[in-house]
Amino acid sequence: MRVDSSALSAGDASALPCPDSDKSAVAQADDEPTNAFSADYRPPGSGQHGHDPEAIRLRALVDLAKEGDCEAFGQLYDHYITGIFRFIYYRVGSKQLAEDLASETFVRGLRSIQRFSWQGKDFGAWLTTIARNLITDHFKSSRSRLEFTTDTIPEGRTAADSPEVEVLTLMSNEMLSEAVNALPPEQRDCILMRFMQGLSIAQTAAAIGRSEGAIKQLQLRAVRSLASSMPPDIR
Amino acid sequence: MIRRAVLHDATSFDDALTSGDLSHLNDDTADLVRTAQALTRSAMAEPSLEFRAGLRDTLMAEAADVLVAQPHAAPTEPTTITAEPGRPVRRRLVGLTAALVTAVGSVGMISSSATAVPGDVLYPIKQGVESVQLTLHRGDTARGEFQLDQARERLAEASWLDAHDQDDRVAEVLETFTSQASAGSSDLFAAYGVERDTQSIDTVNDFAAGAAVMLGTMSDDLPADAQAALASAADAITGLASQASVLCTACSPAELSSLIAAVDAAVKNSDAATSTSEGSAPDSTPGSVTVPKTDSNGSPAKQPAKQPAKQPAKTPATPVPTPTSLKELTDPLIGGLLGDENQEGLVPSVLDGLLGGKN
Image 1 (spheres, rainbow over the protein chains, first blue to last red):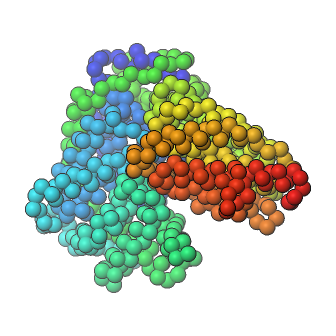
Image 2 (tube, chains in turn yellow, red; image 1 turned 180 degrees about the horizontal axis):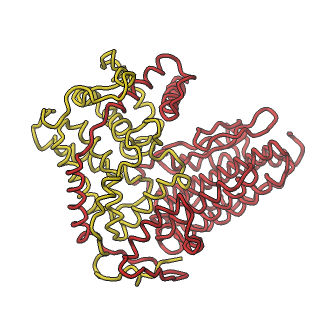
Image 3 (cartoon, rainbow over the protein chains, first blue to last red; image 1 turned 45 degrees about the horizontal axis):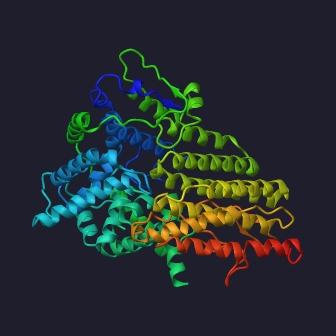
């Protein structure tokens, strides 16, 4: 059953009406867990297509955005912004730079989404590829070193809810970023995508351009490398 | 051997990460899992609310200019969605789509989505409905038959897209077809293993025969990725038929001759497009066919759809996860049908069964 095009073209003939942004949607954007492997977290893409309600919703949003629905793109932004920000932030080590690059990622995504095709791709992996390319361009075009600005990065360990969590966890953002960026490039990106951003194996494979088996091996090697460089009390 | 062991370790590690179950791991691997979990818990950086809201406003303002309403494909059963006064129709659709997958609601929209194809606004609703319906089917036989029905629907969608020159979506639909066909047949083989009702095998063979006909009629001018998906689907059908013949030699085998033509055409088209084969999709798409493992009695063991296939020697070879050319997919397919130095092949094994050469 197709939707009558006349129902969709009400109002502006060149673009669909974009209602005022729903601030509650932004504030509620993190209703779903954004940190991989937390107790109530279900890794993105873990369900088979057709059995994962969230995956179906995201696909519907992408298809609607491709057809010109502004609010659909807004909801995609709400879903992906945290992961994209974390991927960039732990790669570049500066919150201000991460905001700039994240902004550029979504602007480019918006301008290109109507050319996006599902052929073997995942939308989140596609956005990550854009971010990855922007980071590469940034390091090529400047002599920037990995710098940390004390006014943007929380120093020391983040607050823990319980002594057990404090013992088990938590590296400062600076330590984490330094350790990850010391890895070989593919291992680094695998760690950033899988554990900071929260992409699934399939999404990471799509973003990096390797098979799922290769990504599993890559992540194991990367974690081994990181474990050997981390302080014993962190592991 | 070493490579397989390394992949096994990597898979065990990833499985433990996902499930949180470390009980079956050795100490070293368990420590690595805890390290990964610590990494994840440490990565708590968030964009500020001010930045998040500000960027959203900027994007929404630009989207009003950048996103242009795209024309739909010609509807076969046009309908009009009536908007309430003052509420944009599109916004209702976004909300409804999101709500329906978790709480099946609007009966009218559900019934209207039944004929949707990929690219239609209502197609996600159709997928959601199928997902809900699947959960309502209990038992291997019911689930298997329903999933084969879903696979038939995917094949019908792919044929429609092909006929209406919407080739860019065909590959994905065929990949879903392959997945659903494998899952459905796996359930039916499991049912046969328990109940020994040949109807389960006949259902798979009938499905394979019908699918072979439809795959054989798909056009030769599909894009390269669709050709690869077509060959992978054909390979999966051959695998199902082969497995069925192994499990039940007394059952009538599926007629797959139309698949040969489809494979030949796919090989020719792939050879012509070999230079564009770089950047193939991850191995979760073409080639990940699940063939039920059989024990010594020929009873199928039910396996999750995403595990690598383990096959007895007489079944077709496991497809290469990331083929660099279509020939790498089709050589095992032809070997599976006619036999090669590594396997007997479907046709010879069926003849042996009919002539009483094997059990």
